[in-house]
Image (cartoon, rainbow, N blue to C red; front, side, top):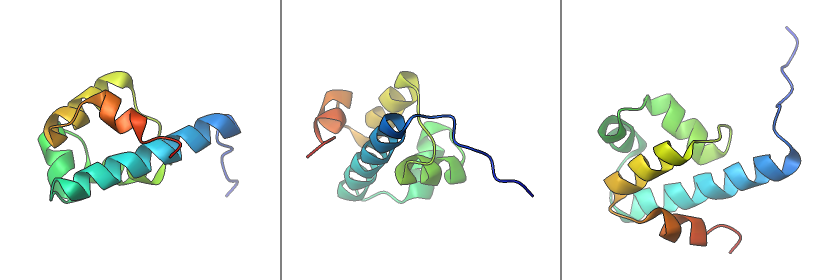
Length: 83
């Protein structure tokens, strides 16, 4: 089976990994499991895991929903990127 090439640029992949790590950190601070956060957001648990790993890029709408469930502002999560 041939592997699929990621259509994202290296910069997009790096950004997705940084955003995923920031989401994971905020989730842990909120005391939630990936499963619980995914459930609260109406997302599949595997999808949430892939987001946190940077394997998937998320939309702004999904970021806003996730932040709402984490009781955080999207700007707070985005501010963590690159630090």
